[in-house]
Image (cartoon, rainbow, N blue to C red; front, side, top):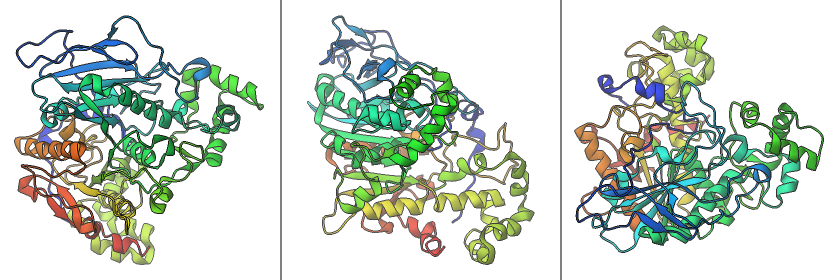
Length: 555
């Protein structure tokens, strides 16, 4: 598997300083620039900037050939007694709501890789992007609902500029917030008793469903078709898509699904397991005892205290309540899931982002030294080190650390290629085969979310090429999210990807005029490689062979 070096000259320090860590995927960038209400002009400006929703009128902006409505509440503020509980209906309003600015991000902590800090619990807002008018060629446009990533603990919907998707794909795009960290995923025995059948730890999942019910009520008012809704998300957002595929309470809320970079056969904590973690969080914020007093204490605990008490590894979906009664992997394998057409895929070098971040900094110099290659493999793989070395030669990667990142990208995590192949096989069941389309993003020159050649890492040149790193495809769909912008050749790939994604949203099939044929998944050789024309272009690749999945199955 030969890797070409990225064009580092195009990479800026901004990608390091302002990118959000995606331990299952978050990206922090500037919000899309908005214009004043009523801006723009010309014959295309026919779609109104004041829209009547089921809850009240909203007024947005027209930054260009698209309309943008921001900060629309889709559920009641989850504050006070509503903290940790399932989302409740939003209170209707009588006057026109100013939808020209995004709503607050949900509570999250800033760090070196996440510039956003928020303690605002009133955060259940969404944003709508549509073509401005005559550029919409259908009466009812497909609707795409974006669920952001961020380790289930960071991120917000307003950071994703959906104008390219809306304009080039003729779709309505809705980007949503949902409760994060302890506010979305804290499970605890007394909370579970108070919440009831849904179980504690389900708030984040149910927030996403509340947003989908808002779409069901209001898509038509924005020119969208409420009967043609696609959910899509990346990393933690992809895991959300997979969880919604398995959720009985999500049935009928969407018609297609796109999961980017998180295997749908990944397993999550059970309610009992999550409640054990939750007891530790409760104790850390001084909520001891039992019963209603513990619930009241947790609902009064300062936001900052709960964020500090949340485990560094985070928490995610909890299996055992009525909204997610079984593991998504088991639901899919049994055939008891929300069977809709699915696009599912990953990036070729996913874990070049996370491998260095998961190793103590004092060990990195040893792992970057090529002289330690044999010793590193011997330590990890023992008698089979030579077999690993034959498949991951040092000459192709530059350092033992980059070899470890290549292995982790191929196998062993929810982001890895072999685990995605497992998900493709599970989704493509016989005798009833659902429409599944698999892809792998492979552009080795894509700007990385974190460039490890830059401070504060400053890895020596030639020892750690990030390749097609986790989240690297996002600027191809959401312009300007991070990095230095796309080259002309990358713009061509971005156009193809947007056509695939929006064709699928319209029809359940990514194929259409002007794009290479994409075969429905039947075996690992049907995975559509997404690469620059000069590096192989767009077409089928055998990702299981490239990732040595048969070899890793013997471990």
